[in-house]
Structures are given as structure tokens and as C-alpha cells.
Image (cartoon, rainbow, N blue to C red):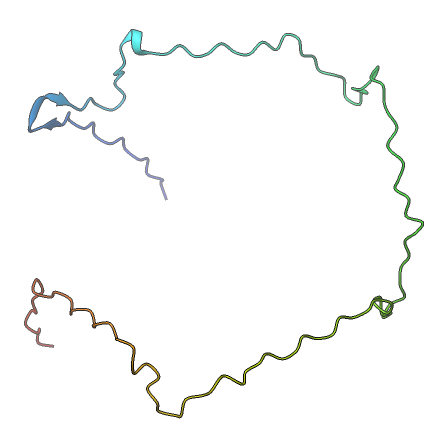
Length: 139
């Protein structure tokens, strides 16, 4: 099966704006900036002071190497046996007392608990005056 090559799209004609005859769209790819409007690319950075070391070379040669700091003292730490109660020596706080609910009561089933509260008016129905039904199509 031969593979089709895509053809290039036809160039678009310049479009004009009806309310102002001075405006047109340039064709794709046209250079629209004038010489003084074009920005020169910035110069490349100076890398003349950089060099590349050989593979495996010690790149810190000649730099004073400080020894790493000593590990922290952990001699006072210990690990408990699996399953041990690690809080055995800690005094546990007593649980808080239950809340006082003696002043609370429950309404009887079916009681309107919002009887004295003014209810907001329901929202108006949506405006459907711009809608129309088309006749049913026979099946």
C-alpha cells in the first residue's frame, strides 16, 4: 500500500476588517518587523575560563578536605523488646468526665422543631418563555 504524502495547504488570502480599511492580516511567514524593531540575539556567555577534567579525575584535587563530623552519641538510647509496653513508667491521665447533658431533651416524634422560625420564601420558577416544543415526529 502506497503511503500518501500530505499536500501543503493553500495560502490564505489576506483578510480585511470591514469597519477599518487600513487593517489587513499579513500572509503566514511574512516578516512584519522593520529593521530597527528587531532585537539582536544576546551574545553567548563567556566560557573561556572553564575546562573539562579527564574521566575519573579527582576534581577536588588541591582543595582541603575536612573530615566528616563524628556521629552523634546514642549510647543512652535503647530498643525495647517486641511487644513491650513502652509507656509502662508513664503516668496516664484520667479520662475526661462525661459531658453534662441533663439540660438537653429530645422532641417527640413528628414535632415541628422549627415552628417559630420564619422559613425563607421558595425561589421563583425559572423563566422558560424562550423555550418552545416541537411537534412529535412519527415513529
